[in-house]
Image (cartoon, rainbow, N blue to C red; front, side):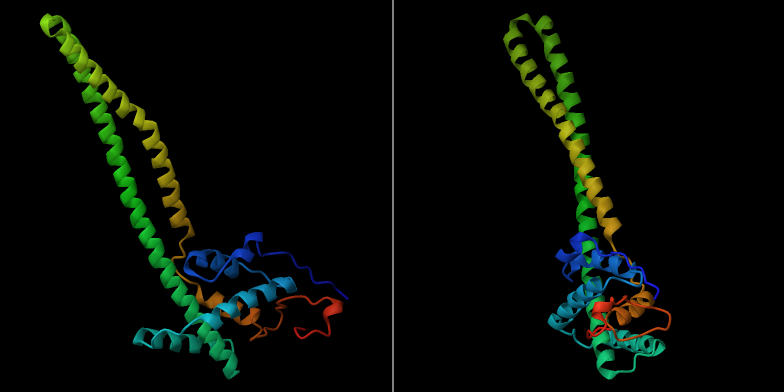
Length: 237
């Protein structure tokens, strides 16, 4: 008998995932990238994660938007010939949950993007302010130093003002490396937000893979998982 090769596809940190907006990008990218056949244990882990989340999910109000969404999904389920009413209802609730998670994920991502844009602008302003102020205090130090020679009677005052201006120039220039490090961190965080954002859901792929993984659909030529001999009498064969 030919052995069907499987490979581990779920990363180690998958088992710390929850189906919530801040984990949505990880779940979605893992799920749409699945290749069949999978390891049996991984299929069961995916089913457990999805089913527990769906069980805890409260259906949103049936607005015209949600009604239109459900109608489009009904057509998608017709196209892959999921006829069992219980399976259809379960899949529709799963898709509704995923849509709500994606909406929440997108809103949170946009908010993070705006927050980081504002932080980057503030950082840029702080950088410019530190340079301008440092240069001005440095020039003031030079002016005060010149005053030592022009106004001998005000030598003490000139010295004190020179020290004052020099200290403040040093403080502003000394802040520049910290501001630049912060700018680097903010840029990295900004790029990470854009990288992790799921801009749009590939519903066609998602519908097919969810139906297969949840066991609601069989497609000729596609084996979701390979069952070892010792599992042949199990409930998932």
